[in-house]
Length: 153
Image 1 (cartoon, rainbow, N blue to C red):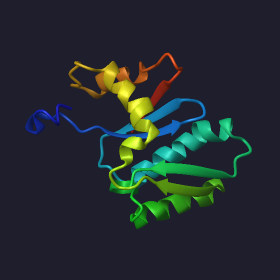
Image 2 (cartoon, rainbow, N blue to C red):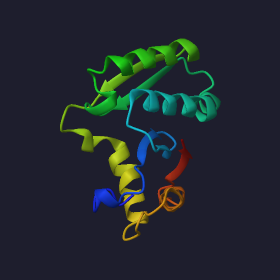
Image 3 (cartoon, helix red, strand yellow):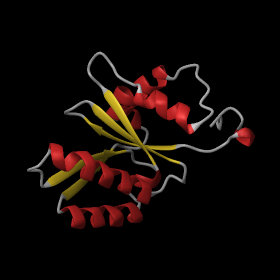
């Protein structure tokens, strides 16, 4: 926390990964305190599928993932592709990943529909602990019906 203002004074680092369901306007944020890795991202997707996705979409046989072009889930990450293949094998889902072009990640619905509202919700609040941060994430709702849920790793 406080990592952007005074990195030397940071207590910890919070890594978010979000699964956003466009059809239900629901965001599931997984927050970890480890590094931003392909395993963390795929575990978040797997947890969402096991806890919510397969209940909500019982007849689904495929999953479409829209992802940013850079970082751990980049189009060039062989590790991420291998781990998504493992998830596909276990869940018996055909998984397709479409990447936004570099520099276009701000077109990702997560940025506009979820992160912007979370940022407004905790505006001006020092995020000095995970509990404070998670409380403000969980309290995020909008008039259009957006609801945010979280899971701490």
